[in-house]
Image (cartoon, rainbow, N blue to C red; front, side, top):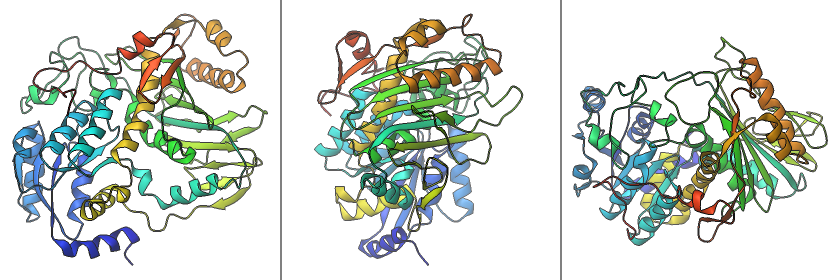
Length: 478
């Protein structure tokens, strides 16, 4: 039996084929390609990737399957085509906004991978471009197409478990060292490096490999908090029904366990303060013990001293969100509600879920913004949570354990999290007295202007917008 999403798509397909191009598919973009190829009434007509080897390989694979597509290294050339209705992109983060703005200006609808943007400022420009050119622009956040999340958050918002007291997000994912080769990193000969860099600075790289490891340097990525955590951060905003940004943020952490070319923290705790509920989010890239590639299960103690864990069976990645309420908690990874004793109250059914590309095409056909599972404005706001936490860290300073403990005095949740942070790092031989963590300041955010206010505002606002490299510039007026 077809799912609800697939059935709707088949009916809408009678209106004519949607012609789709995919940009960036060395990694997750291949999932986009596979999903579009399965859809009735959708034709894949073009591919774009700055690396000719990646491009040629995918074109050849499609040709073997009897599918002919046009191939481009330069996105600008591909966007000139009039026979492309929509562009789906899984390029590196630093290209998301520029590609989206250009595509909107060229009259194309867009499905853009998480995080929607590289910075707060350019995320808002993506929204402005979508509205000005009347385009369907969807942020590719997978959970929005999950009916289990729909049902879980409706249950949460019904008040069945009482008030939400605290939200715990976590993204534990094994991340080994990327090495360090100052100025001698490998840039493939098949790559148009100028195009790949786009808005980012162009020069030699200090890591062994260009591809994927761009996540771990500030000029192109934002670490795990901008890589996989946007899925959980979006779930948090969605569940809380928040329509703006948190009023305050603070983060502390560091890059521990190895010395490499990476700049972003691999162990990180971020506090986001919403009016509806406080949020604590934890990132770990080191495994459960030295020599392992498996991650810890999430465990913590509530402010009242009750131990809380997520349902998890082990492996290299453990991600999720726990919503602590007055009468129990929801473990969104397990798609279930529990009493604090651990007894399951309710399981949330996932029947009718579909992939985000299917949701996107349905909205492209209807031309109704309400049909977009994650409209670009929602994607932008969720991405801002990543940017805010990273900005606090980036303007922070090294702090000894005693200083961090003092800053967290009176905060039972924060102090408990710092205790687990310390224990985890000690297992890996990290002495925080000798290699202190970086602690950012509390930053206040004006959600209406999407600018920081108060103490440290000047430093923080300097990171709200990036420096663009000509000609890869997003203008003030899109």
